[in-house]
Length: 282
Image (cartoon, rainbow, N blue to C red; front, side, top):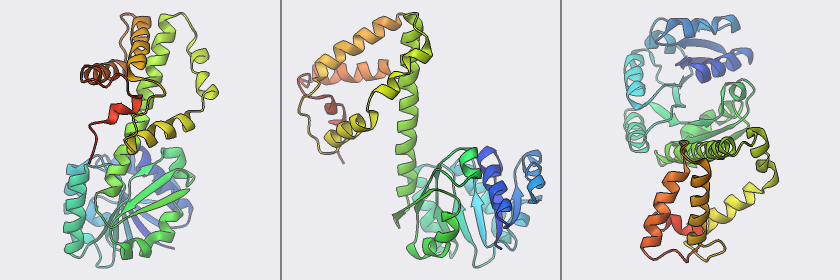
């Protein structure tokens, strides 16, 4: 049985703490809003009044917080209670540059720290589903690998470079948000066309989106702009989409159209749509 602290018990943090308590771990929680922390008491967690009190005696401390500033503040409050052999696991979605600097600083100070953002919602956290990314010292990761594996269906160690998990988390969230924006535009066009939204999104099941995404991504990564769907033709179709939506606000396609216009003006209209990433080189 492991002694664990969770600092931050919003929806995700509370779900993690609940799952840990149900696995038989000794769990202490803290949250800025005490009511959110007390909600986990029903599962056997103990509520602490301060971060330092919460982490005292813990083998692992999990941070599930809002942003970099809150991470730094809560860590500062907790430092007095941390044991010498504790491992701090930070699940917060943070800025890569600040994350790398924090990881280097804390490990240099002797605090074993890993950045471990996740792709999962509360139900997945309760049931050890979803994915967890990890960046940080290999030896620190190895020491907690089996425990982290109990929290997720997929555990992906990206290496010692401090910002890799943070930047890959943003990659994933960009895909999720971008997909959401595009689907919102489809639903908007459906409304403007008097088509039921449920009928419009049935296309998701008809199209092989995984294969399409893989083909587009490969072209962009390899800078292969061979036209199978020329940018100028794609821009024509995006124009039809915008006209179909009429005056209704759209989430993603207006920005795509503006970028297409820039590239066509620069002479790239005959290239494939992978040319949208022409200026994304390292």
